[in-house]
Image (cartoon, rainbow, N blue to C red; front, side, top):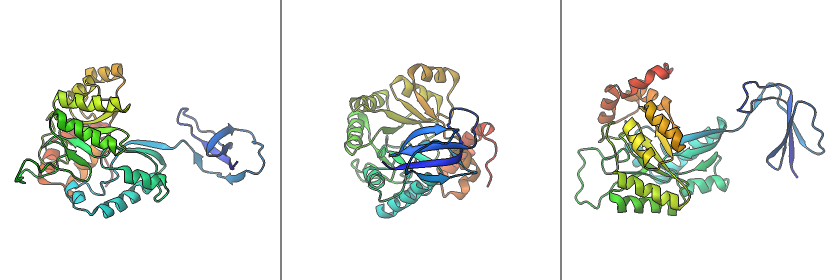
Length: 311
């Protein structure tokens, strides 16, 4: 049995506000067996003295995009898959070095990236992936510019982090396909967004029947739907339809928050993303429509809760 004994550790357990010094932690076969303020007696353990450093639980980031090396999803879409995967490997390794031992990818990461971590080919946190996020035509996951014309209706968009599906049957098929490829949960786009070029922020996306179909299919697989929602209206309708996790939730009001508590629904705020877009949108190679959304004041409304971001 492999054992590691950490000595002289400052401990932060994520529950209590204090972090005592001079602690010892015994790990056996990758399991924490004992934490004590007194010497732990164990034979043959590898001893690591970490005086001046802190031991704490691994951090969890519930909303990442490993396949977005830039904020320009158009540029990401034009990267060769092997280059995109190489970027993702570097991004995930960086997350691990910053202390994140578990991350949930909100659109883009796939079975291949998950297997690369599981097989030790790349270093990264435990990864829960959604496959490609599902968007309606002209929704937040449809990165085609408004002046792009398709020669036939069969040319549905599929990009680096999202895929387009329309109608109950189309959404059902798209959800089943991501689940077939091993997705741990499903991501849908249920309101407008900043980076997408063709949809206003206030736009509800997908019909109630389409959202309900996604919820039904994930429930059949004993998993859940996470939904991109900026507006209060989008969040409220998703919660009512059985969505389990609201992403962003920028304009959620008190009655919707109360409903979320009653339904045991989670919200993942991602507040710093909106602030970065507001402060640095012109530097990020975003399309003109995205810059107009930022100028409209959407990101500015969130700023009082954040304070300034250093440049």
